[in-house]
Image (cartoon, rainbow over all chains, first blue to last red; front, top):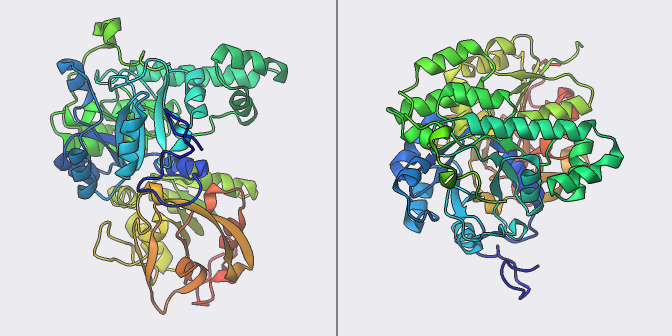
Length: 311
Length: 201
């Protein structure tokens, strides 16, 4: 085994983690345990408590929610250790946290803290303009954003155990998450419909490893779950992305930038669990505590888009 | 003996993997998200997921009481895996509140956090078989009362237990290709020895 960044024969993930082989199946299995749930961005222990009480399957510990990162600017980094630990100590549900793209040292900090899932996220300021983290070297599982099938498979090739759409975080506009879900579905459909001799050409066009592309051609699905993220703000948004094939929902600014986070969180959990039932959705919409105002994606200048980070 | 009618609780968690396991056995299991969908079921799987969330949703959609009632009436066998097993057991003073059906107490996340999750091949004595068992933020069985029976251990830890009309695993048989325990669950005569009055299946 090698580490990210050097070649001295040690693994990254030895830290506080248990002994034994790093097992990809255990990572993907954990991602499956989160299916049908809502993962909520939180910045304090108090918010984490509200999220857990609202029925969140996990919390994502952040220094600032995406809407504030967008507004305030500056370099967005991994949350402080104290913040992460206070959130871990407050809730019994899994704690996730974000690292900058390519920042394997931030990832080692999170693994040492026994953070349950690491999000190598475009919401933070990228640390490496060319390379993502070699996630195979970590015992902690990683989730990564993707806008299309090729990007999803590249991240899986690097060791991601869970994919989420990028959407356009911090806007409260769900349209980019919808675009990414539909595109991934359409690309898988085109691949499945192709004869086997065309799979290599697909791999070339997708810029993804042939074996993973062949796996999608054979199985008709990604080898890891695919969740929705980026702009989900209401129960109806959550139901929409679930109906389009997302297996769970990340909600960032949508809960703690709403007028009543406890009510909004609970309503989104309710809508996600039974997304296909309009009667339940009506109840969830009624129970929502005033959605975040947000901004339409058209108002976001190209240089301020977060989804174009990563490759 | 009538054919089993199998449901998988699908409010949150790894229900899809359980449904796929039953499908591989040619059993047409259905998703259960509402109280109405419990009607007519003889077998229910409570899957792994986040136990606090599943508890929250069982209360929210008023399934908890109906599951307990149908089980106590001897109409519904239940197989809990991981968080499903936690919920079947008794309260340990920590959230979430449990259903209290199985005469055992399970402690959540007792092996630690996700980095402490693991896979191990274990010999299941009661089944006389080996199974690759996936433990994910798994619980440990802290107490086993006279109404429950340990069917398998991994070292000192009980990992598969049964009670009247109840089967509980601390690991995830739905995550591996071997459907041994799904087959086993559909044959309560193999594991339901504690209370022969229970007549499901």
